[in-house]
Structures are given as C-alpha cells and as structure tokens.
Image (cartoon, rainbow, N blue to C red; front, side, top):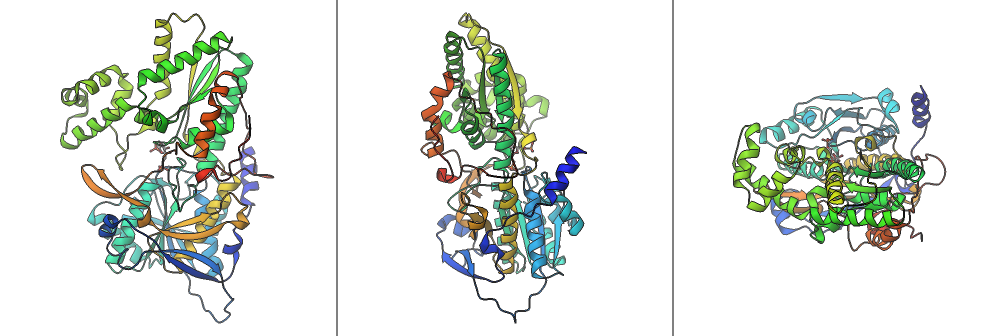
Length: 540
Ligand code: FBP
C-alpha cells in the first residue's frame, strides 16, 4: 500500500524537458562526421553519402504546416535499467502532441518481439501507469539478437506491416550495434522505417564523445550507495565485520568507482587498474591481507571492500584462461558434464592449473554459459566469496593474530529497477522525445543523444549521432564484426585520479560517507559524467 502511494505520487511528476525540445518548430543542422573506413565497408547503405550528425535549433512557427500522424515501434533490449519506461512515455507524449492519431507499438520481450511480430499498442492508461516507474515490465525485455537473414527479413516484414515510420531500440552497446545493422538492412531493402537507438545500461559503459552517460546508471549507483552506506554505519557500530560487496556492472568498473566516490569505502577494486598493472589473483589476496593486518594494528577489525563484478575478467591469468576457453569452445562441442575434463586437456599448463585451483562453482561458470552476445555471465560468479576464502587462507598462513570475520554481499538486480532518480526520469523522457523528433525528421541509424547533462534539464541539448561513428571492428566467435566499443574506466581521467589520490587515507581512517536514500525533490546531484563533468572535487 505504501509503495502504491509512492507510485501514484511519482506518476504525477511531469519530467522536465530541455527548453529546446519544448519548442513547437525545430530546424535541423547537420554536420559531416568521420567514420572508420572498415566500418564504412560494412555499412555501405548508411555510409553511401557523407555520414552526418544532427542537432536542432528553434525555428519560426509555421501555421500552415499539416502534420501527419506518426507510427512508431519501440523495444527494450538487454538488462533492465531504471528509466526505460520514461523513454517510451517520452516517445508517446511527443507523437501525441504532434498528432492525436499517432500510434505507438511496443514489441514484447525484447528483439524477439520484432521478428516474431509480438507487439501491443500502447495507450494512455498503460503510459500513465508506468510513467516515472522502474522496471521494464510495460513490454518486458530480452537478450535475443536479430542475427539470421530470416530474422532480419521477418523484422522488416513486421515493421512494414505496421507501417512504422520508426523503430526505437532502447538498449546497450550490443543492442545498438544490432539497431545499426537493422537500419542498414532496412535501407538496403527500401524499407521506410527509420531506426533510432537510445543509450541504456546500468553498467555505464555505453558512453563516448557523443553519449555522456547511459540511463539507469545514476539510479543503480545511488541505490547501491544507499545500501553501502547502511552497511558502513553498521560496521562502524559493531566494529567486527569485513563486508565484501560485489557490485553489478559486467566488465567496466564504472559503478564501483562511482559508488566509491559517493561512499568512500575502505577499499574498492577497479578492474581496469588491475588489468593495467597485470595484478594477479595472489597479489590481490596479498594486498587485502596486508590491509587487514595494518588495520588490525590500528585496532580495526572491520571494513567495507567493494568488488566490481567484472574484476574476475580483468585479472591477468583469468583473462588468459577465459580467452583460451572461448577459443577451445568455438571449435569443440561436448556434453556439459564432459566439458571440464576435456577442456583441461586442451588448456595451456598455467590455465589448466588455474581452472583446477578455482572453486568448482566459479570454474563451471567460466566454462559454460555465455549470453547471446558471447559475454561471460559475471553476474553469476561470486568473486567476493572467492576473495574472502582466499584471504582467510592467507591470514591463517601468516598466523594473523587478529580476527577476520567477513560477510559477503552482492548488489546487482536490486539496482536495476528502482524508481528512477529525477535525473533518470528527465533524461529518459528527453531521450524518448528526441527519438520521436529524429524519426519525424527521417533520420535513421542514429543514437538519440541528450547532452550538457551536468546543467539543469532546461539547458540540456539534443542531437542524433550516427551509430556507425561509434563502431569498431572486433573479433567475435572468430569473425570480424562491427561493435560499439564498451567504454572502460579511464585511468587517466579525473574520477579515477581523485579516488587514487584519496584511497590510502580512506583505507586506514574510516571516511565512510553514508549518502542515504535517493531524493526525488530538491537539489539533485547528477551522476559524474564523462571527463568528470559535474564532479565536485570535494576535499575529504
Ligand atoms: P545490459 O548491458 O544489457 O544493460 O545489462 C547489464 C547487466 O545488468 C550487467 O550489469 C549484468 O552483468 C548483466 O546485465 C546481468 O544479466 P542478466 O540480467 O541476464 O542476468
């Protein structure tokens, strides 16, 4: 009942739009933009002429203009991220403002809904119910990829059948790569449906010179930071536990870094640094044991350690092991119960030794499931427990005189569907409105981008950047394929530098900073953006 009350309160909130997107008439301004020549070859239709980015500016009202209704389809793709519903609400309210007979169709359960033609028309009641609400339950999501010729063909047929002016793909790097392939396919086959992407993922790794942050990141980090802060208060009260907290965020450690900056833990691992320094698992365990011993000498037997879920993939020997496993699995097929023994015979001696050393739950995960995009499912690997066990063993070996009582936590799914922060509500709504405007202006193969996010929403600006400009060529399953490159933590950037400068102080003199719950009213702190924009270098 309580949550219903809160829900109804949130549905009354009308997200703020940038001033620019509130204007009745907009002129488009395009600018030629460079594309990697290899990508040009892979997208001959999208790159036939010069590839252009588009921005908007206000134009004079034209009273004689007669607008036609717009028909748009949308799909949520990949993992949940708070704010996805508001992208859909933004599209809907924008096309209805343009023409009351406009229609919005939601493809169900992710991209599979497109090529199987499973959709639902979204109307006022649905839109109003889901406004400012977390989750992807309005139309659900899925991790399917549009891959085969048949799936592309069917996708085109259903978009044509629905006479769609546009399709909005709300997804992460892989889903937007897929959106770009779809845009190319539609152009090649004279299909009028424009494809526009929106940057979604809590992981924060879909960002580049065009995209300042992906939506959902802010809500996830603030949700986890609230929980981390609560744990901090608990541990400084009892002074008897070390809490090892694994944080979601597949490969990149953006979430761990953002949460560390917000809460100032005893220690936070940053996967990218571990990779750069080629830190081994044993070195990590040694460092942690040193830290625990040193704190014990200060009479401290407690602490809060943040572990990004992607850490395991960045540890040098594990990375090599995963690469070897991927190559072996690409050319061999075994019954699942025979994979472990067979792989051992094909790995290099070092990797084979490591695979046997790791707890079976972890080695099984490394061996088996990959998601449809080929990613190891790090959400299922309990790295925090592995570290606790290894540190325990190391401290026993050292005849450690203090107490080491550790508790493991995993904060993952609980951060993806929280009520979106005000930032995510406004940002997502604007992304949706902008996507609809891009489609109305017949731009295809572009990402809806809202920028200048460190300012108030009224000052944000809007653009459409070609997806091909964000692409690189990577080898996946032995083939060269175009992909939007994941952005990793910049070890030279101001955010990491700030953490690096302060972490030794935080490690030994509990500077814990419990931030409390997300606030929906009053002053808002946006997430730390690319290049540290919006980040205040508060001395602590
Ligand atoms: P997206 O990249 O699709 O946004 O998903 C991100 C994520 O939440 C990761 O942080 C996490 O490792 C993974 O999804 C979990 O996947 P699943 O929901 O399939 O368990």
